[in-house]
Image (cartoon, rainbow, N blue to C red; front, side, top):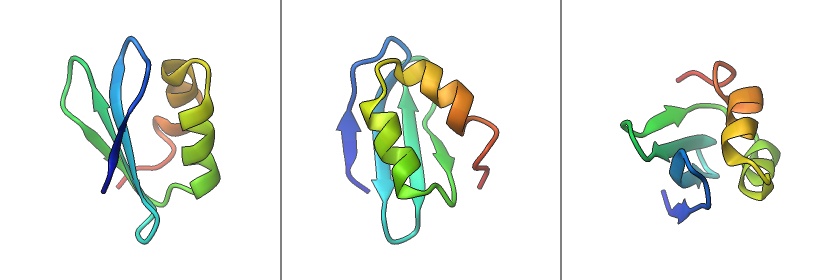
Length: 66
C-alpha cells in the first residue's frame, strides 16, 4: 500500500489499496489505523478535502471498521 503525505494538523499519511479497498490512516500522535471496504470515491474525496481531520471524522471514522 502506497502512503501519501497530506497537509493536516492531525494526519500524516493516507494510503489506499484498490484491490482490497483497505485504507490506512497514519496519525501524528497515535498509531496508524486501517479501514476496510472503503469506496475509492471516499478515499479520493478524503485526499482532496480541505480539512482532512473534519472529513475523516464525518465520513470515515466509525463507518468502515475492519
